[in-house]
Amino acid sequence: MNNFVSFMRSNIGRTVRIVLGGLLLWLGLDLGAGPIVAIIGVIPILAGVFNFCVLAPLFGMTIWGERRRSIHAK
Image (cartoon, helix red, strand yellow):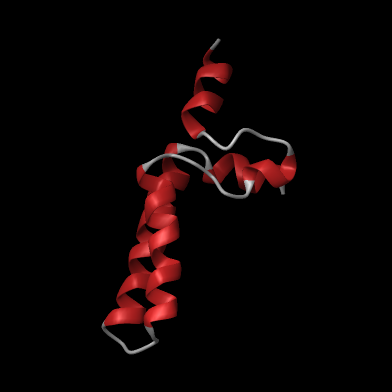
């Protein structure tokens, strides 16, 4: 699971979160899946835009992706 969290905190993971969040938003608003689905879709969009991973603290990692990259760059 740590590999998954590490991936989601990477730049590619950020892109995946934004795209999946947009998909959920579209499903909720345009295809009639409901406003709850649309609201849930906003969370991964915000996580991708502001570069944080909500799952990381559950596995003892920092929530901020930028901090992870700066640690590994040293």
